[in-house]
Length: 148
Length: 188
Image (cartoon, rainbow over all chains, first blue to last red; front, side, top):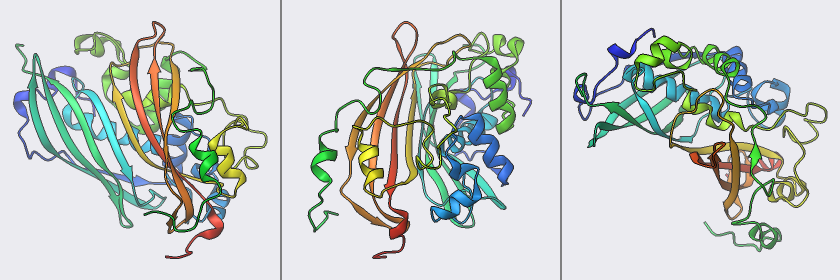
């Protein structure tokens, strides 16, 4: 995304039930390892296949910090650079493993005006063909409108 | 789901609840919030939100200047890697203090670690130069559960992140399953 602040969503642009632009992320070992190292998580299950299989996993799998990073990107790709994240809550299920598409979807579940900001809650889901990798919610603040 | 058989670890685990987990004093982040680590993150995630690197763009947004990606909160205080012996420690980056419930569980065969829940709250976005500290308190340890990947315990802690002025910048509730991989498939 190359969205600039002027193109960002304003609170008035958002309606309950709005769907976020889906993100299809092809997961590879490189994607998993790059996220693990950028988030400074050196647990071998996130980069060493032999270690992961010895722990009972079919392959290396994405670490939770990386899942949080992609959830954040997914929401701000939709909302734009003026969006301020207030919280990210996720529960992990199926592992995000290589050679599967991880599809992020989301929907606006609440909107509340709070002073000079608008608070928007979105329910998010990241799934592959094993099932739901992550489900949860993200709360963001948006400017009310361009004039405010 | 209460465990029917008595659990010999329960009393020792229970003693740690409400206590600091790991270091008894807040852990200082190895590095202040900085652009090289932000750039590394932005590229790894292909996150092109301009407020993370583009000063001009960030200045025109509400932030007034470059801010760190909020999901990096946990990253700033991750322990420095001690690469020697990492496999022998079950993959832990550093040595755990001996009087630690995670060590108790690992010593009892619950060597596997799987993160299951994360709840991040951001009080403010971080900027380059912010020097973070993290204080972590053990919130709960479940009864022993049987899962498809093995028997284990859900361990939940809460970390409070503060800046150089001791003001809270964010919090995280984090839950992991410590499990015994040799019991995978038992009872399921």
